[in-house]
Length: 168
Length: 232
Image 1 (spheres, rainbow over the protein chains, first blue to last red):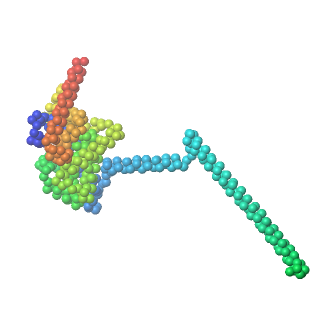
Image 2: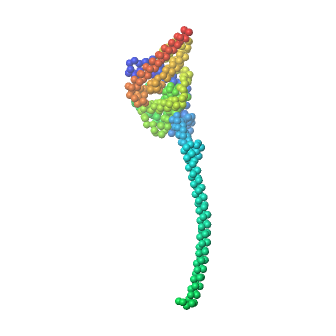
């Protein structure tokens, strides 16, 4: 079966080449008689124009390239999901392990909390103070109005008496 | 054996084969008979190539199936456009799949077992050849003296040759398998590997020399072991 004229080398090994040809022939003969029909049936469905009604058997397993692609996609998706969860946990969850940086952060958090409380208390106090001041001002204003009214009346009496005396 | 055409006969791979072109066109049009004929032409050659490397018949059949699934998809979608060098195209797809499968196995740490050597068709074993018998004789006269049948001797010779191929570097083994298992001409292998024919001839020759050297070394070793066994 070997093409005897194909090689140009002088020191060929026809015995070994014939043995290899026989090994190849044995390997080609090793599948059972239904091998070709099995492969043809299994792959006929991949022909786009396969006639309808023809019984076709799909691949039991997808092509190896597709299997690898699906596995890689799954791995990539899993890694991305794990990374997202890790980043989310770092951002949102409190630090459980004490460390210098963690202590500073805790102190800063505590300071921020106390400042917030102080501001809240201050605003509440200012509200109370504002209300009381407003009341006092209202009272003062009312008194002032009374004083002005009294003064007006006194002035009027003084003017009337002074006119009646004919001093003008 | 079911081979519709003799391996490496006729077309050198340089000239488009009108019969093959017609088969491809008919298969592309959905002709099931043409598709079955295409599969019958190449399935066993691809199987032999895959089995030799993967050492597993189930894996080899699955790989052949995936190659023909790719061909069918390429024909039906019109992406196959390598007319005139169909065999080079088909075997290139197969070689790529085989390399991928070997890489995958290496990543998974799978061992390449001795496969299903017992699956070799009995007819092929019984045929025997002087050449194979010659190899067997070089490897161990003790087997013959132990009263093994001719079929057993032939099977032992095939197993020894398979084992010897395992010792070849992948590039050497590849060209041997494309030539003797896949049944490709040197012109077709040149198209497949994109190398000059002269380079391939030299590579093939070097691969044979390495193989012969290993077989002779193994033969002398086993003969030496046998002599030791008989003397003790």
